[in-house]
Amino acid sequence: MATETADDVLSVHDLKSYFFSREGTLRAIDGLSFNLKAGKVLGIAGESGCGKSVTAQSILRILPRHGKTVSGQVLLTRDGKVTDLLALGEESSEIRRIRGKEIAMIFQEPMTSFSPVHTIGDQIIETIRLHRGLSKAQARASAIEILESVGMPHPSRTIDEYPFNLSGGMRQRAMIAMALSCNPRVLIADEPTTAVDVTIQAQVLELIRQMQAQLGMAVIMITHDLGVIAELADHVLIMYLGRGVEFGSVEQIFHNPKHPYTRGLLASIPKLQKGHTLVEPIKGAVPNPYDAPAGCPFHPRCPQFMQGTCEVTMPQVVEVEPGHWVACHLYGGEDQR
Ligand SMILES: Nc1ncnc2c1ncn2[C@@H]1O[C@H](COP(=O)(O)OP(=O)(O)O)[C@@H](O)[C@H]1O
Ligand code: SF4
Ligand SMILES: [Mg+2]
Image (cartoon, rainbow, N blue to C red; front, side, top):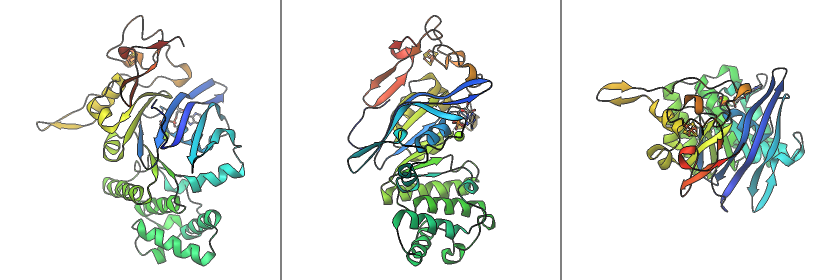
């Protein structure tokens, strides 16, 4: 989905990542393509289990052992040089350097970013020294500066705290500080505000927005919450069962959604209409991914299902207006998979 242009910083082509177990092969990502533009925010949305986290893990080559990226390309462009991250060894020095320095990641649960036995300062300082080659004193000064910039209270004191001594909101800030400490080209944020309360959520999103504008990073904002996407994103990718079903600008997705799944997601956002909260959930549940439906994967739940077509062939991706891509038979095009 999406046309390639010179300002793409990351471009993912026909990515397939599977998990192998006794129950069979789980096709967590099954032919996903999208582009991320330098300095822009791409929101990735979809219900739980549709492959958002596995997409992030595949890009950074941090899939669990029983998972494998079986095909595709993940092209990172820096200073005109293109590197296919999937061609690098999972433990190669180049991918290690890229993780953190070029592409940083923040998670729902900050404790996964930190070791419990070191202070947050030690961990941020180590990251800075590893990637920027500063002396210990310089790295400490830089870490305090970054903690201050993410709104950490009393940074010169907090820097010596252990993660478990910080509140949830402060840990979130410390994790963002660590991610930003090397001025990454790309930040991948996987549900960064799902586990925190609404006030902290607003603060964290505002912080990501400010940092993105100041540092000119590109951001992949992964969330099941379309409200977050509406606030932050320039472009949106909607995923279903390991595939992209719709891609467009935030205006196209929110004002002119085409795919029945996208429309369903939008209709299920609580909205106030004449004082009443009207929510229309999508019927049914995400199917068992070990046993994905034939044809269009959304067909068992789709209100616009067309017998004889939708359960038979996989819809092809079609550009319905410039920069707006949809995979649905309502818009023509099919292939025989
Ligand atoms: N470590 C894992 N082992 C086996 N299956 C996994 C693992 N992580 C994710 N999956 C499966 O891959 C699919 C995509 O999961 P995930 O990317 O975590 O979804 P999301 O982040 O969109 O909620 C799901 O079917 C999930 O059950
Ligand atoms: S291809 Fe058919 S089943 Fe799939 S979303 Fe479009 S109309 Fe619905
Ligand atoms: Mg997830």
